[in-house]
Length: 193
Image (cartoon, rainbow, N blue to C red; front, side, top):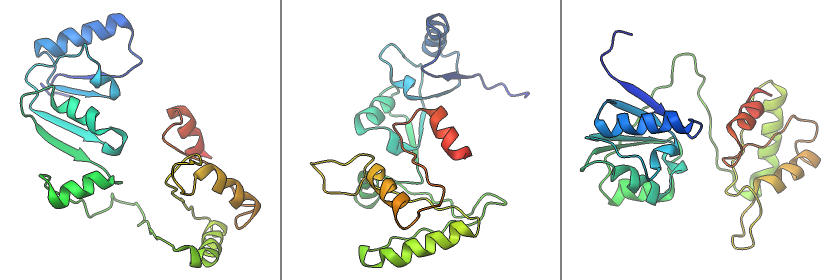
């Protein structure tokens, strides 16, 4: 309130009329701060005087998509945010032209999250630990590299592992699946359970 910053939100759900109005405002420079989803990548969108591009959850955007966002301006400043950096981004921080800023503190009231990488030989003890924590009223998230099994990559997939856990080590515990291909509403439902 009271700010002179003209901001607008672009999402895929805008009607054609609203979208056309938005495009005209963006191209004329009538928007100071433009916030949006992947809809910002649309061909018809031209933005005047882009000076800063901020990409949150950068792992959800491909290399070409991030480059396309940057190309909307003439050498804009570029800030990428992520809590889960992809290997390419990690490599760029080590060998490329990315400066790193780290937010080390947690938001007030948020408990610290413990992350562990467990080798297969210690899996039984790890699942026992997870079961104990769940029984104590805590939560656990298990991250797998794939959603579905792939013949091309011999990696564990979340869907198959979920079924094994339901029948085995975590039988009787409330388990669910969450992945990036789900609609936002579905993700919200899973997180509320």
